[in-house]
Image (cartoon, rainbow, N blue to C red; front, side):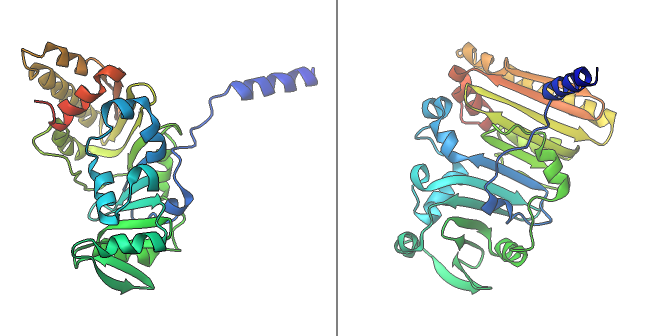
Length: 300
């Protein structure tokens, strides 16, 4: 009987749902996350560029953060840039990059960048102007942002042990296969969305959230979940209503001569339970480009 009981326990343990390990973040970037970080946004570019969804819908189209990093460094993002991680304390943000930043390769390119002045800080060299710059932490790690934010990042280098506990807990809700993800642990913040786009309206909703996560898996279409925890059930109901209204207005704004664009909104579903609100996103591969265009204001 003891052997039977032990066997049953092992079977049940094997069937138990395992807790997500969270998204994979390169250790060199993970240990640079400042202790006051409230927002992290990550993407694994190597895997992203290989997906059929990217190849079909985004290849050759602008990707703002990737393009900025590439223009400031002279990198080829498809060969030399592996991973990006944006970190913010709600006031200042820094874009961290992991890639092939060998000094002997980078120096000639950086010398040709307009306004690329150098200044030293605690043994590292900042390249840029008096407001914005970039710094090479190592031959494979770089940071881009406001000078004050870079100084703060450098000040905390060596003392960081990864994301703060609230963010680390939220990241465990994100599956490891997510190619693009974000985690937000609360506090005032403003995302750099076009205010005239549907995404611009999300900044108003953030004010009602205590915490939030979002992730996307682009291996087959655009599949993801955005989840927010509000202060009260009533606030969660307000956010649910606002999201449903936003989706409804978007559907109504579809031009009559392009009825197929209404399908873009068919893959969106909003639920609310207690303080928690979820937005489920399930867009077929053939509609991904139209979906992105509708929400960013690119579609006309």
